[in-house]
Amino acid sequence: MKINMAKGAVILGMAIFVFGVAANAETGATTNTADTATTQVDTTAGTPGIRPQVKALRGDIKETMVESRANIKTEAESARTDVKNIRQTATTSGRTKAEVEAEIDARRTEAKENIKDTRTDTKEVVKEKRAEIKGTIVKAALEKAVRRLAAAILRLETIASRIESRINKFEALGVDMAHSKTALGGAWLKIDEAKALVAALKNTALESRVTKDKLETLRQEVKNAHDGVKAAHAALVDVINSMKPGAEILRAKIEARSGKATTTPNSGTSSE
Image (cartoon, rainbow, N blue to C red; front, side):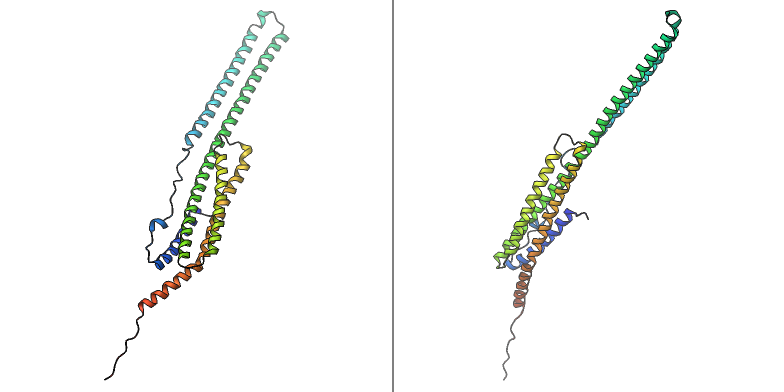
């Protein structure tokens, strides 16, 4: 099942917000909404649209094929004209019938070879252009994937920093957060691993040309980077879960303190 990283980041952000409310209530501080908002990253910036490039390449293919058909037509008409001239001059040239037929066959063979060469050259050019189109599309898809994964990592880094802030607040209030700190350290390592995988994918995407023999390698690199981001996301979820006992302790303190504040002792009455 495909995981929506943006949605997951929002869920993590909401969890941090809840824990933040508990910590701030204990300390009497107000919640900073700017601190709990999910960081928005522009994922649209980067390489311009590929439609003009693809359109230009397809135009080149069309022109090549039109030119090829014109050259073939010209060669065929030239061969027919030459054969006609050979036949017309056969009676005045003093050549035998066999010689005339041999010359005609030679001209026809030459025309066939020229047409064959033209078609072969055209196929090669068209093949290269189509490969370039495919490479352009793949390259654009890679760059888009890199931007999205990089944006996801940035969101995870922002959330990890907020988690760290909450852990520090919990500790300042006397809650043991050693397990959560260890889990967060592991999550940071996962984030660093994901960043390295995305960086490797970015280097591949920046290559001037993506060839067919690289497609399988590219698929694997995309999968590795995506899996790395998923692993970092899952690690942060584990950190959030590890913080729940601390949040419950704070809630209990808040409820106990609130109860004491609202309860007043019964005043005694004196009898006459």
